[in-house]
Image 1 (cartoon, rainbow, N blue to C red):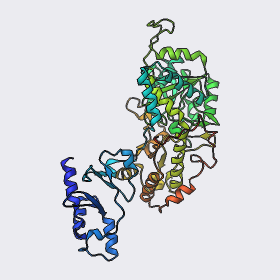
Image 2: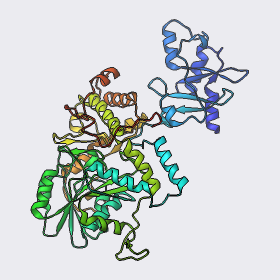
Image 3: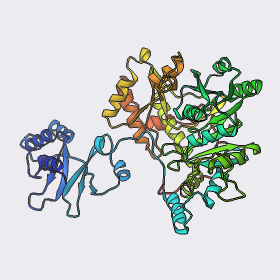
Length: 521
C-alpha cells in the first residue's frame, strides 16, 4: 500500500460508534464522499456511509450528535484485493463510485475509485476461453510461427464471410493494403484516389509503392468517399480507387465501381473497420478487385495485430503470397525470385482470429445493441447528429460516432470530450483529415472531411458494456446539453431494431457463422 493510499484510508476511517458530525469531518477530509466504518480493536471493515446517506438521515430527523451507526444505508459493496477490473466494472454505478478493497483479514488496504480505476473504454477486445484454448493448442503442438492449420482455417473463414474465393492472411491491415497495391503493379508515377477522412495507413500504403495518393472529400450523408469528387480527380495517371468503409459504414460502391469500369481503374476496398457490414445485401470485402481487413486490437475482431487480403481474382493470389513471404519460390526453398516482404501472420495470431470469427455474429449483435441504445438516448438532442445509415447499407458499429454541431448545440465537441473525461468516460475525436497531416499537407480545401474531424466524436463502444454503462454515457451527454433525463427502462424498451435503422435485419441475413456464446466471453 502506498503512503498516499494509506493516508487517505486513515483520514476517512472512523469508529462505528462515531457521531454523524465526526463522519462528516471524515467525508470532508477525504473528498471522496464516503467515510469508512472500521472496528477500532480488530481493524475490520464494518461498512461505509456516504454524504448522501447522511443527508437523507438528517432530513428524517437524526441530529449531528446521533450515532453514525443509526444512519440508514444500503449494504456496502466490497471486493478482495486483486479483484479483476472486469469484476470491479460490474460493481460500479452512479450510486457506487468507491469500492473498498479488503485483505484476508477484512482490513481495508486499497480503494477502487471509478474515475481512477475504471474508465468506460472506447474499444477493447472481446477475448475468452476459446481464444485461450486455441492459442494453447499452438503452444503445446509447437506450431507457433507462420505455418500451421489455424492460418489456413482463418483465411477460409474470412473468404467465406466475404463471399470471395481467396483470403490471404498478413501481419497487419497496412501490410495487406501494401500487398494489394503491389499485386496490381502500382508504383512510381501512378496515382491512387483515397478519401482524406481515413486513418493515415490508407495513404501510407500508397506511398510505400512510390505512387501518389490523391485526396478527395467525403459525402456529408455517409462520411465516405464522394463519387462526384472521385470523377473530378481522375487523370491519365490514375490507376486505382480505395474506398474506405469508414467507422463501419459501407461506401457507396455502385458509382465507384461504375467510374472504375469506365476509366479502367482498379478498386481496393479498405474494410479495416467494417467486418460484417453489407452493401445492397452483399458483404463488404468482396465488391472490388481486392479488399483488405485489419485485426488490430481495437477492431471488431482482433488477432492483436493482423490483416487480410480478400479477392476472387485467381491471377493475383499467387503473387500476393509470393510477396508476403520474402518473394521466395514455392517450388525451391530459399530461392527468391522477386523483392518480397515478411508480411506473414503467425499461427498463434490466426488461432485468436479463428476463435473471433466463430463468434463474429455474437460480437456484431452486441455492437448493434450498443448502437440501438445510444441512438434511442441521443436522437432528440438538437445539435447532435447520429451515425449515418444509408438505405442501401447495413453498417456495423465499429465505434459509435456522433457529430456535435456547435451552431445548433451551443456547445463544442471538445467541451463535451472534456466533460466526459472528467466523468471517467473515454472518447476519441474522428480521424484528422490526411490532407492536413504534416507529411501530406496539400493545401486542399475538403470541407466535409474537415468538418467531420472538427465535430466528430466516438463514444465508448466496447463489447461487454452493460445497458447501465450506455445509460450513464447518455445521461451525462443529456445533462451537458440540458436535456431532460431519460429513464433506463424507456431507453431499453424503445431501442429496438437494427443499428440506427427502422427496418430490422434478421440474424440470418447479417450472418457469417453460427452464434457462439460462452459465459466467459
